[in-house]
Image (tube, rainbow, N blue to C red; front, side, top):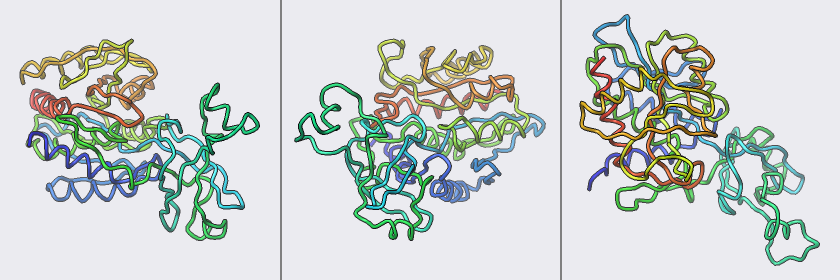
Length: 344
């Protein structure tokens, strides 16, 4: 079946929990996968997983980033009855996840609980009635029901600061013809592109760093650390591109090049190089400007860590929710970037 290998890789990545700042599960997976490909890879001090493809000119280098962290929630307070109060981690909303199984990544054990909003068969005396008629549900109004004592939770290391993500019980991606529907495509599909490039790139003209960046959802922390230490000619950030009425982005299998986002402009010269590489590989592209959005590239460029940054993405429905993207657009990003790397 077309795109079966790509779907499988994304599925394996999705099933690795990686909330911002607690990304060890996906780190182990990536290091093992890069090792199996015979590619040099390591974790730096900021928890970025970096794969290096040596170039014919060792004095020149670029980076392609795809962040490996996912949004979710963080424990704010553990109550005496075992209920766990939580707050957002990155751009998450409780109503997107709905009531259901979540995993709490304790220090000594990962346990499951139920994200809960309260009963619906209530009168106006109950605060939950407000969410049915007037007010949006917020994290302050939600909790995780664990059915454990506070002593049990302490024993497994659930505490303020513990990360909470959608449970693996309901995290498996779903195939809809040539699209993939899943939580956390925002980062896992981009990391799948990095793995595909690690497998296909051989002896590029310049050194290519493939960076699965850490803590992007909370401020591009990993990418800023990396770009502060490695001198780069250019950085290309891989991202989802939100489908919405205000953006001229069509759904389907055509990748998107951004010119500007909520953090600033991208480099037009680098974007033109990517467009030329797409033409060389007979890959169509879309162009857009988006708001309420940022990437490793725009943040690093805005802060002066790189002189030239661009953003390449794939159209996605339901961003930061149960996302839907065309596997063909993700696959075309792989081939476009391979063409770009060989053209330098």
